[in-house]
Image 1: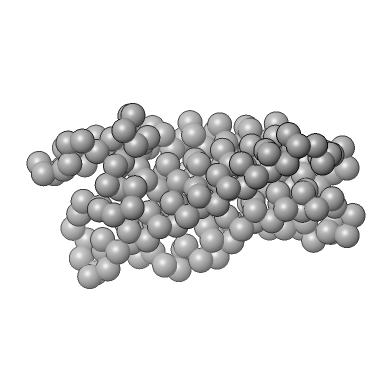
Image 2 (image 1 turned 90 degrees about the vertical axis):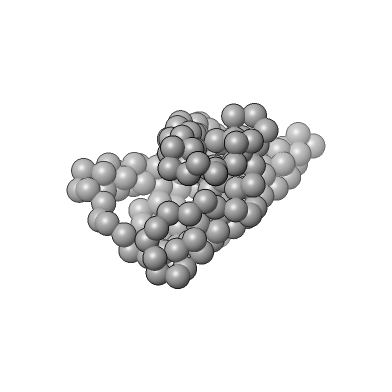
Length: 198
């Protein structure tokens, strides 16, 4: 919730004075967290609870990250001029973010539908990028934040993309390994995190 509320606060209080690109950066950031905070939790089946220390660490990270993204992109010292290079980065970053978000949401939907019948047994995901990688949802989220970093080109944006990659790539690998241990018929040519690579 802090990853949504804090940047949204900076967006709302600065909307009149913010340059359009700065507002757009914050809108994309908030768009992800509207899905992650307000929509996604109501679509998933509630499983076991989160341990208190994990919850507190996530809360701390989301608060600091939300503050850094919101503050940095709403302050006046971040200026984007209208050069061809900035326009190119804006286009590439935004396109990459949107593609990543589509992959992420689609992959989450595929995973949710595996348990649609109410049973808790594990199944192999198929469809979308799951045809190529075990961690399609993780890959999509990393692509989102890489796109965000290319769009924003600020230290907090690059730090967030890097931390997301460092967190989710190993998780994709562990999920991949678990699938191979759990299912004898798991697709042998499916990679862990990057299609056709690893």
